[in-house]
Image 1: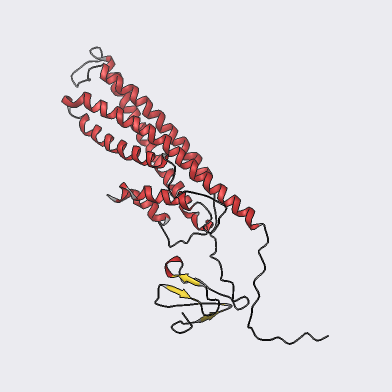
Image 2 (image 1 turned 180 degrees about the horizontal axis):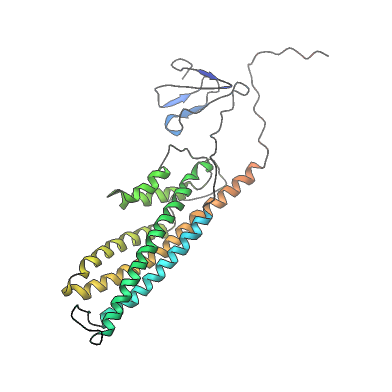
Length: 295
């Protein structure tokens, strides 16, 4: 593609090319840009027209502190789930405490009921705190992706990565896809020093699967709790739900550590590479002749 059909706007030492085609072929340096890979990339400079300007890297802010806090909260939630399993097993051993009973009639049923309610309310509080800090951590990791040379307009934005958890139907698959993309892009975009697979480790889908099934089981458990005829079945479903919650917490901690380690290692390696001096620009052929220096 030649210079026809392009509109050149001189702004300082650079310019932008605008066209309706799917690619942009610079008439100066002949560097081909794909339209979907950049937002009208600044192509060349007059000082060095053969060298296209690389994409600028965004700032990197470590998510280590948020990861540590959410890891502690996930551990606390798993501990509460373990205690709930013990209490629910006790509920199976004792008859249900009904409204007309006295404390002396069924002390075991009353004690297990009180413990169950206390742990349930505590578990809800810990869950809310965990969800808030986890989403803050996820947002930070997604915001860091431009620091590795990835375009902001590509993939899931940080806002949609967090907001997809609250959108019905979409919250069944979009959060996992966004988290998977964060793992995939937590590497320099144009570096060959890393070898990586496009598929994350197995604990990524294990985390998301346990998380979804545990939520479905918890919903069924609470629906069955109010029915006396389904009390024992509801308790068993609750135990299954808590077991899955513990597994989801363990896998989530692995996901957090894997993404955090990946980003920290990538930004450290990029810092080491940037310490080496850049190669000199290629010579410009065919330019205007300069007069020899006068002594």
